[in-house]
Amino acid sequence: MIVDALKKVSSGRHLTAAESADAFMQMMNGENIDHVVAGALLTALAMNRPNAEEVIGAATAMRAVALRISAPEDAVDIVGTGGDGLGTFNCSTTAAFVAAGAGVTIAKHGNRASTSQSGSADCLAALGYNLLQDLADVERSIAVNGIGFCFANRCHPAMKHIAPVRRALPFRTIFNLVGPLSNPAGVRRYALGVCDQETSAIYIEALKTFKAKKALVFTGPDGLDELGLSGVSHVAELDADGNIREYEFDPKRIFGRYFPIEAIKGGTSAQNAAITLGVINGSERGAFRFATLVNAAAAIVAGGKAATIDEGVRMAEEAIDSGAAAAKLSAMVAGSRKE
Image (tube, rainbow, N blue to C red; front, side, top):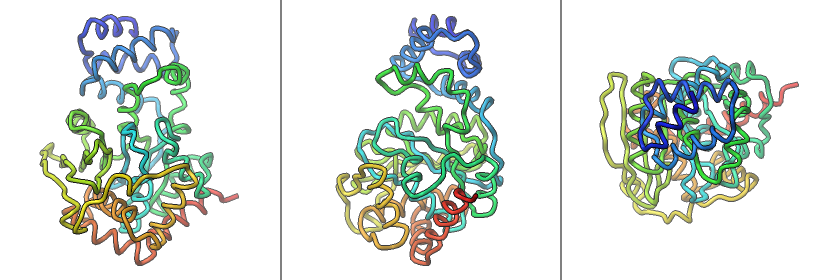
């Protein structure tokens, strides 16, 4: 199946969703994988630029073999595709605690860094979170604390079959697009950041196929995979009936000015964890806070707690200033280290 897929993609054609699912299921199952052929397929897909059908097929395979985590029906994932190369702080991770503090159930999916110094898992580990806790404890945290972290490395053990190939390739592959669509908690509500509007269109089609109830897919200024502060962001909002509303979000309307991308630059996992703590405990009052507020607001809208991002920002502010966001962080970290 992988060879057949490679023949088709290397000729410049695209796979159907079924063909993509078959090829990636073979990779996930470790069935007679020739790493050279698998690497060639990933390379050919990258050169062609994957389309929606190929991403849907690959995500279908990855979802099928994931270890499942139970979560309430209204759970939200807030995540970015990564790869924007801008080195910003762990904004979506920080925003997850704020959205949870505003009453949104969060089942965040993430991993260690692949294109930056600090991925969501790295930041959380620096905050004291135990990445190796049992998945049953993650389920319990989502149910009891209203927030839990689905560590991709634990939830997708089938990825071990293709991991050596991914590590050997010096560029992003289709797996970077598939990851955010493969939350093991099966969430159907998303606040999802991507680097460009072409990818946004792919994600909207995929989310429609996977019957998302509510999703905000956004592209920030400067190619940021989050709602940004340096200019206007583009948002595509999908509802349960498959209707799409596209609009622009201008942070200047709320904060009175723009901030350069350098204002939200991050660093190592320890540095990013310190930024997260500063935002969550209310001591950080500048751009890091503002970026967190708007992205938390997107998750609040996705969770059905607010009608607009502007309304969500006000709820996010209250979640920080009341101490609710800090309580969510403390509860999740403490629960993960339970003996």
